[in-house]
Length: 125
Image 1 (cartoon, rainbow, N blue to C red):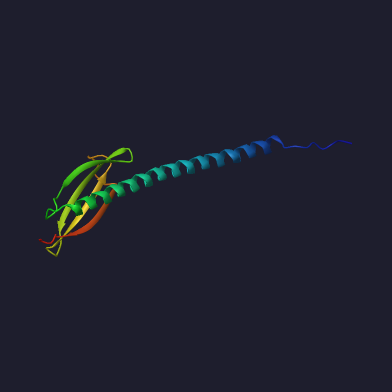
Image 2: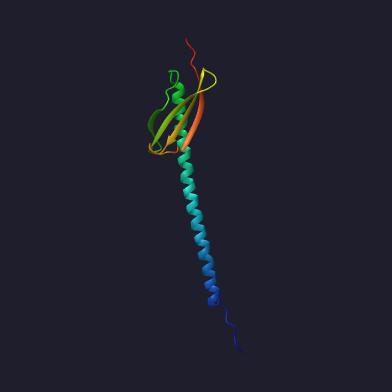
C-alpha cells in the first residue's frame, strides 16, 4: 500500500507566494498614497492657520482702507510661509474684502491656502 504524501505541491506554493507578493505591492502603494495625502493635509492645515493669523492681524490694524498687496513671511511649525494680502472694494464704501493667500515659496504661482473676510471701516472717535 502506498502512502499519500501530505503537503503542498510546488505549484501551490508558487501560487501562494504570487498572491502574497501582489498583496504586498498593493499594500505598499496604499501606504505611499496615505503618507503623501497626510503630508498634503498637514501642509494645508498649517497654511490655514497662517492665513487666519494674518487676517486677525489685518483686522486689528487701525488704517483705512487696509493696504493692498501687503506681503510678508512668518515662521510656523518649523518652516517659513509667505503671505499676500489683497484688498478689494465692495458695494458698501464702509466695507472692504480682504483676501490672504499663503504660499510655501514666495515665487509659487498658486497659493496653498486662501482665506477671505470683510472688514468694516473703523468708527471715528
